[in-house]
Length: 275
Length: 275
Image 1 (cartoon, chains in turn brown, red):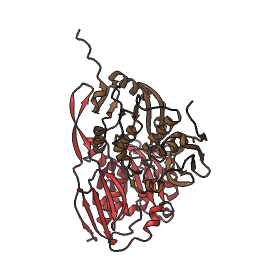
Image 2: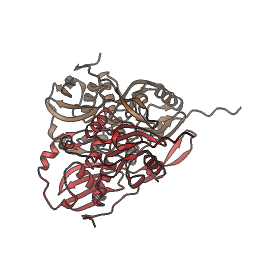
Image 3: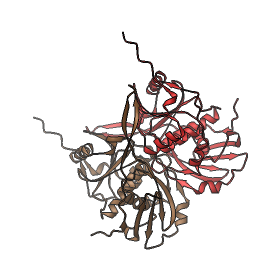
Image 4: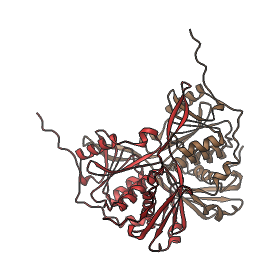
């Protein structure tokens, strides 16, 4: 049984319904994605305010701290308490975080958004990442995963305006998290992986969003060797993926894909024998 | 002739070409969007590092400072110097920015991205925004604008992975800026509006991205009463739009749209008379 900190269970309803007027002049009830500020406190110190769908706020808080390298293991976290009355989440630890001021001083505003925030020296840490080489993804499994994603119930289908991320083992989706912000969805997956005691080495990370630098960095930080997206990629996403040797596949939908980097871990299906 | 600070002209190539492998096992040259870090210094003080396409770095720097309310008018800026050798942009002012430390202390990580950054008390300032009421957008003009956007040459068509924003007057696009991050594209438009001496009151702001809180806030800050998007909206985007009374239209493409807020400034085309 993996260690579990004390946790609230404070997911919010994912959508609300408003009235819009369409081009025929008709009032149409329209589902829209929820969006709430959530201020994160680490041992009573204010770290950041995230704007989130609120579907997995505890996992989001833990994953944010994990991906920003402000907490180095789940066992250091004593409790995670979300309180929507004050739009806040309080994380308390068993240990003091070393040099919190120093780590929070350097901000990089990242891309996905154009203007996200990464504390500390994440880029430096990438040099330490070693992704496993004794694993591979074959084409049929990729197609199976794309089909699983297509059939998955989603807030996106109801309301749009969200990004989704999935953690998969082969073609099976282990968890699927959507959020207003793509970073939040990734962070919440990182948090839930810790809570469920899951390693990344034999997993595939799927995102509906673009393959930008920080999407590649975060996937690598979680130790996941495969990154698959429905969308395209940016130059820095490509450069970092090449450098760390992650297997990155974009523009993947139905039976189409583009393999960008890490070819050595991908197996194409054998062509059918000629009749 | 509007005031102009000293400016470099340091746009970067928008795309590079890499080789990817498709599902047929063929190597296909694939255009991808450029992505570069750009560290912004205001009077020698480091403010933030933006990840950008680099298509309009001077306008981006000015617009970032404008939208974060770190500079209150263009005339206060003496020079904007982009240097890609050091991935930096140095903005020097004629006046000292008051209370820079105080303004930079409060960070809100916004949504578009999930984790963007807004300094200071932008939400408070919204109470001061008054959008003009003596202006209207009719349905045919909206359709004309959607057609202009559709026909516009874009990096998105070549390489994907970027968001686009346009400033329009009626159906005419005055400027169209794309960037890796949606926030950057909006900020660059804000910067260019200052440089070109343009007011927002008779303009329409178009974005390919979602209508999140900060998209609505920034449009309102630029004094623009019309906000149009191809995508959907989030709850906070809706709440803020209602509060400030902006005319917001989403899911608009071809001859379809949903009018969400600010109905009083929108005129539907008269139905054709029965034959």
